Amino acid sequence: MTVHQEGVEIVTSATKDQYQRAIDKASGFRIARLVRHLGHGIYHVPSATAGLEYTVRVDERGEYSCSCLAGQAGNACYHQAGVWLSRIRDQACGRPEAIAQGRVEAPSSKSGAGIGFGGPLWSEMDDVPSLAEIIADSAA
Image (cartoon, rainbow, N blue to C red):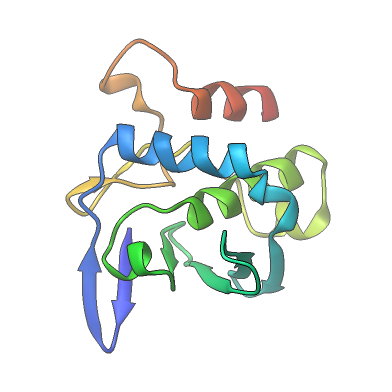
């Protein structure tokens, strides 16, 4: 995952477990239902703090970034995971805008120093499917 902050590129060093925790937190907060897609890979996601909203961007490679403090530091956050879950849901429902954005992959590819929300599955890393892989398989 690449975060652009004042012209500086920050690369995430998150692990599979950190992404899984972000997905679990987004699922627990039911954030996916609150995500607003503004177009061109830009999403607004509410904060756990009332009245605040963060911007999540998904670039053409499927890399996610977020304007929250964790995202600005290059870490996986539940806002990014919420967007990922909402994209999976929209694609599974056959929504045209989701299909036009391209296939959403399970959070799994090596991205920078860590593992990102886009790309091939974790099959080369372990044999136990994660919750994200189960969701992605059921959506396919």
